[in-house]
Length: 411
Image (cartoon, rainbow, N blue to C red; front, side, top):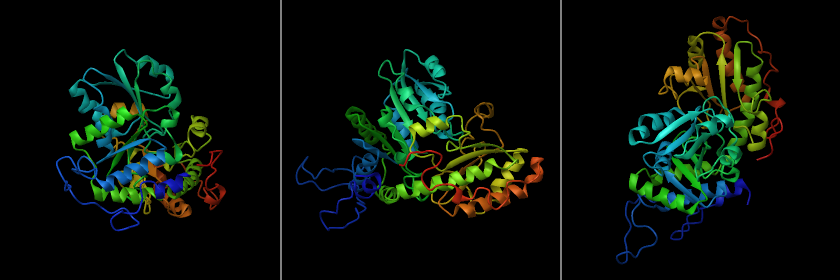
């Protein structure tokens, strides 16, 4: 079955008791047993719940994988995955990563004796140099957050020499645009809060794998750590995932139009989007991904005050944390999502005070462009340039094919 069909039908059998077409919310903590140890596959909802099991079946099918373990948040999934390791183990981590992931490795896991080295994983030589005898895991995001660098998953997987696990945070792409397990990763991890849920109304996470042993250990850790997903949240994520294919196509279409609009303005110094031919890993993105996603980062000309003012002046782009919802969001990473990273480290990674990150929603592309244009034009005096790129045709979404953006294969 194709992706869109799996999204709607995998794990979604009619309820055997009532015939309900949509899997119900099983709001129960415990289950009546006919005798000690005799039950219908469920005994306590921290261990397993029918609504959560339905979601796990659905998400595993989207990845074309054998196992999915759902968690109460993306960081809950990350905590369980890193708990597969032991004190004294070492992890090589992509240096451009979500601030919460950075915080987990540097302020929590290090206190338990888990060592980590942050490295630019687009540089395979640097990755090789970072490997130690006690390295047990490679942890990467691709595209990275927020600089949208592309890491070669298959190349990283080929660096394994001693059974190291390769974990890929695939939140930005989702299984619709990228398949980490097919490229050699052992675990794909998601903040299901983002595109998979898709409506900014739920918090959740997932770890997906083909390895039976890893899956068994993750289920044990979910049960033991208690970071499991509740049935109501599982229901919302299941509902959101059913329209993932439709939404991801529209996110990408709009992002492509906006990225082109931004590149034609002199008051925007840099645009980071893998769908642009100017992106340094554009060809790798075309090879590794089936689409370029809906996230754009940009650096404005002018002081930080201009970036803050633009973020405050947009009307359709809401100033907010998170990403991946149907509505467009604008974010100032240095003060918001990546504020837990020290400034000198942010600057080294390119997360400057003038950087903004856009989560492009599924509204009309022309309306979104108009919103950005008015916010940029209103602050252009701070940029030290004159307004340009404001003609009606710039960033015209009709110039960009809906699903075939600069050679991306069809999802």
